[in-house]
Image (tube, rainbow, N blue to C red; front, side, top):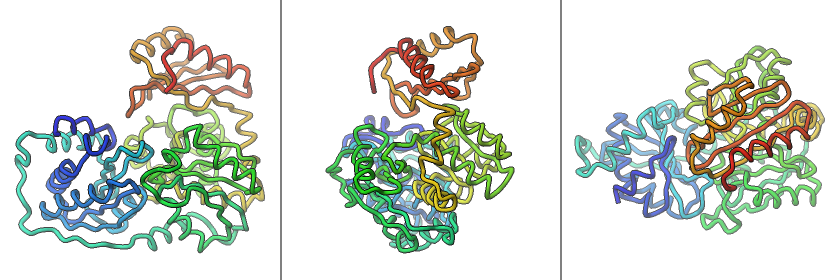
Length: 456
């Protein structure tokens, strides 16, 4: 088991097929190592809706308690609720049992230290992996002097109160919103928020169900978008929102049922925050940048570019005292949310902006989409990613090249970024132009011909 389990330790989290790669023995050992490594007096635990979640959480709790750590169990929740509880309760760390948008046979863990700082490959996750998979575990570990305690707590009221601090309810007006939790955990929180909002929610795939009866809760998949889009069109709703399973990402649809790329939401939220705090620092990833940079220039924001990936983004935010940061993949980070990502704060801010301006979402982003059309992220499985990157670098040597994250190449009226995934054996391509959809189609096809491979 331990040799297989080593594969479960990724760059940012622990993730694998249950019970072959992630199971109770691994979870117990993670708890023991985490307790010792961070001298943890108290740790928050929670889980998403996956069927194996409770059993894995119990094993984690046992490992932590055997190390002398007191466990605060917030039960079924979203990943961001672990971030919030860790910071709000001033604990030594938090562990979320989740595999986010992966298929139902997967499970895993996301770990944070004190202050909700991520535990990733460069902050101890690989060391934890080595300790957990050591042949003679628990080498170097001793049981705690006292068995840690176990206590269930309800973090939802404090969490809801905090979410509502990001908006001014005085500006809110009645809206009709299609809400699609994808049978994940978001529905419970939406219903709590609804008590304080003048919005009517029309739910679909509302019931939390770890069997994923309506498919993997991953709205970025084209096959998963139509149910939300169709219901928006059918009901005449003002907005559609869909979440992934652990709801740390949300995806927006306008009143026509059109899916809005996360890239344009980054720019929209940047503008919102610069209205609140003029001259603030705004962070974004290198995949698509022109729209965001134009908005920052117009609103006197200070740009901070950062390599994509939540561990890099959170570290960059802290180091540069950034107010808000966004990735085109729909991860949005907030200074006042312990520099962590949330799938609830973005849509609250967008609905407030719609109410303030009296504009539909299509009106808020439509002109930006025309000014800076983009391909959306295109994934390809390739045999030799390094060879592909070298070929692209050579072919586009006359462009302005940047290697902050993969390879970015810019020309006067178009640019692209291509990078290898941090978590999967695929390459990801993004292309954008300045007001030229024909050029976008031409260059996207040209790049894909060089990249080759299969659709991923």
